[in-house]
Length: 66
Image 1 (cartoon, helix red, strand yellow):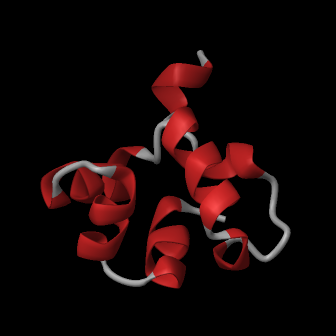
Image 2: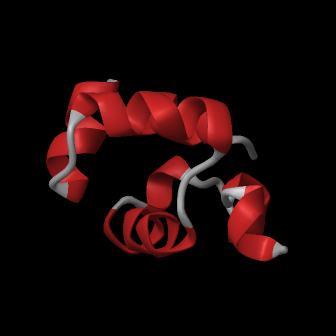
């Protein structure tokens, strides 16, 4: 599951930004680079419905995995 799918499942970039206490611009960057792992885990905890039982590592920012 990619970052766009997760963000869209939650709602808008604005809604995700509000949930994570970040700017809409930050969420826009996540759409391109992936959701940072800590934010992804948080979103999974507060909005499990948006993940449809997919592994959480798939939308992680690949720079953090290396």
